[in-house]
Length: 182
Image (cartoon, rainbow, N blue to C red):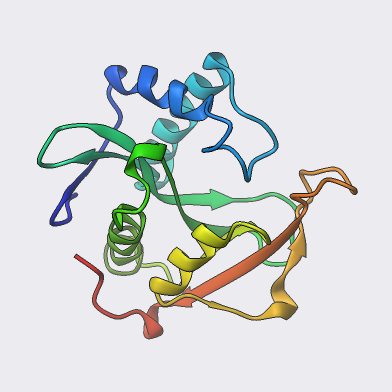
């Protein structure tokens, strides 16, 4: 799967080391409970790859077409944690710091949405993040996703007083999806 500037592909063994470095970066993981250890990062890659076999989609590894550099992931993941809107398929992304500010998340997110609606036949795709994650919220809005404050929620996998527990939810229905950013 491709965009103009990115190759969205299945994971390679060689992706594990830069992915682990990215997941250990406190700035990249600012809106997650904590950075990941190498073992946690590798287990996440295994879960991602399992998703491809189970659902036909998951989080694709992102490679910059021009350089071949691995820069993170974007794609679709089934969310089943306890919340009023789950189970739901989420579009998500995580990029290495050096890849921020280039529009890669929007570009890959749009391609993932296109895949979800046209190839996977999904009727709705959601995206969520901690309230204070303004960068990801801006991507969701660029993708045409909308937020109803009534859908905001406290993430059930985080403790009651955790500062990341308050989350916003964005949605996009297939009939509201337009041509992706490329």
